[in-house]
Length: 92
View 1: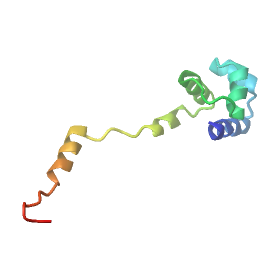
View 2 (view 1 turned 60 degrees about the vertical axis):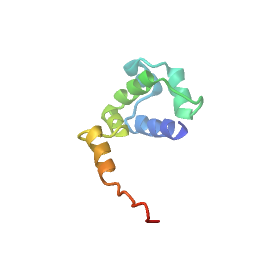
View 3 (view 1 turned 90 degrees about the vertical axis):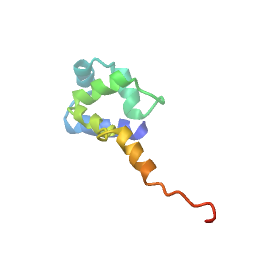
View 4 (view 1 turned 30 degrees about the horizontal axis):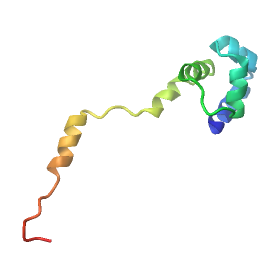
């Protein structure tokens, strides 16, 4: 959380935006932004985080957190099972 807050602050400053401007644009309180940027508190609500990312035009970056689904999880599981080799009784 500390690293995320610092990165957010760096982007905000690079965009020459104040915490108050971010608060007005995102609907997140200034105090929440201050705590997030300082890394205080262990969590930030997901809806607040999304609103903050949107305010610095990085909302699309969130999609990278969850990779695309494989073609089929069922097919992937079946491939793994078919690759198993059965040992014979007298083999060690």
